[in-house]
Length: 491
Ligand code: C2O
Ligand code: CU
Image (cartoon, rainbow, N blue to C red; front, side, top):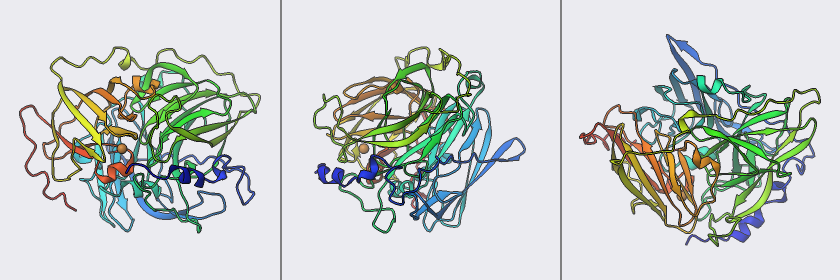
């Protein structure tokens, strides 16, 4: 049942995919890469107050064609929210959409009732306020909708934005950090269009809203013209269902500096990096003056299946262009040597206490531990400030990943999945190849009440929407989740 007609779907990927900018049927030039603006906060006392509004609009995803989309404060995607460790923030989120949505802060340590998951619905016309203190290290996080059953459609229509955390430690490092100049966000997604340029919202069997047209920061086939010789890209796989293997057209070396939850221990040289939905990578690449190079991706087969676990291409097919890059002017300064150490919190290996609580999660056929998501059921009760070791097994013959709210974890082991330097860093989402088993070390440090759950789930959004998700409540040792959970949650 997991098999779809992969051949036909792949064949349906138009030749536009391989040269998105150049083959534009309108004949216009490749458009400059849009950079989401940084959202300016107001202040209230010492609190930074941000405003987001989810609303419908019209976007030119493909040059010359207008497509109805949804965005935060604009017609597609959302502004970048930039905060510092220690900040008290308040985000007021208005809903000008015709249906209920939520906004989840992916990767953030925060109280469960501020998480923006399925339990914090925002009805049309309403405003929801999230308020929390930034308690974590510098990282590239993101925000997106999380209404149960419709997350995929809301994200596919355009609702997603970046949330960048800065801190004093990372400020000391000689890394590109001028947003929009040498520190560039790349939100990589996919769309599929109907013949009249609407987003095609036909769910494909077992894979849902999987696209065939690559989109970066909301447009297809953009060009980034560098002004510096060294550029940092903060890359988010914001697609609903697609895994990408990213590389440059000349297979040049680049440096991976960060994973989901912050900087790596030290820079790692690579020629490609895998990302699955929800994951982030920060990379640094050096450019020669006026050169032309393309950031490309290879994507997984449309059915997400891997024919042969040992195959080096891991089921990857269909190479295509994401972003054309033009090098800086000749007078651009030669960059310094990269710092050798980036993140002291990763220097020691993860060593969970011998008393760590162990749990297992079997992922199979849209279920976790043989259960579909039930918003009124608490699946796990976790003690605050206590080490946990979770073993996650992908029992299917296609890929899944596993995302945990409220924390960043360390990976203790992972098999069968092509290893990537990202798993040595702080992670909130981990990719599991068919048959793979991962063990991760976690700790939850945010206790607010025993009433509100957090989620863990597959971040392949069609799977998540089908119910491949569970709920856990963080309690004080000895405490039970409040029986009030489940009431007042059925909005
Ligand atoms: Cu990115 Cu539960 O979400
Ligand atoms: Cu999945």
